[in-house]
Amino acid sequence: DTAVSQTPKYLVTQMGNDKSIKCEQNLGHDTMYWYKQDSKKFLKIMFSYNNKELIINETVPNRFSPKSPDKAHLNLHINSLELGDSAVYFCASGVAIHTEAFFGQGTRLTVV
Amino acid sequence: SQQGEEDPQALSIQEGENATMNCSYKTSINNLQWYRQNSGRGLVHLILIRSNEREKHSGRLRVTLDTSKKSSSLLITASRAADTASYFCATDIGGAQKLVFGQGTRLTINP
Image (cartoon, rainbow over all chains, first blue to last red; front, side, top):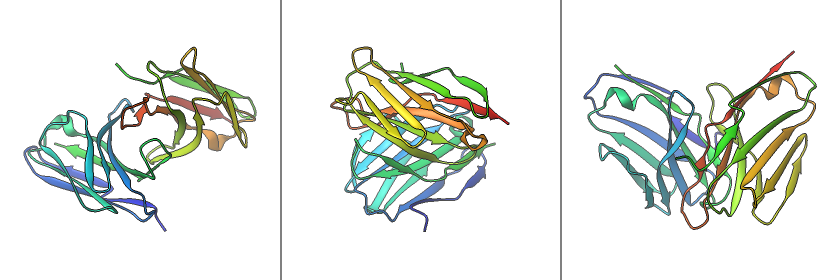
């Protein structure tokens, strides 16, 4: 059973489009995150949720909107996609902020 | 600037040798974690060391933490080809509600 699953794994889209990435965890964790990994492998936190509430928003453009319908899901919607949004996006979950994080396999987003 | 920075950025060694990677950070922490990322995959947690601990072992992994120098090291002993991956340190930054990663060390084990 996959602990943290994200879909799709690959996403190729044109500039200006709106897209969503879904994330689900079956670990019963209270905390979920979205990270962006750029071409240099630098991993930067975007959002952090605890019990469906937004805890951290790391000055991400408001074109990015996370939505947490329940504790097991944290989806990422991106409006008006730009070339610079091309990256690998990782969803992760944890018991709490300071503990071990479990990562999904990533979604490679390519904006053309 | 980043909280955690790994050194070296890339490391290539022969199978069977030991690999040492270092991580430096800037602010006080509650704990420091090390993760591994295989090519095209998500990160996998390896080990967590708390700020009041100095050394921790897990199998072939040994992690040290020096809070006075704000640095940590990850030692992989008797390396194997399967250890080829990128290794990241992550800190929680005391008081902040987030886990911050460094840029990673890309480790290549040559057969």
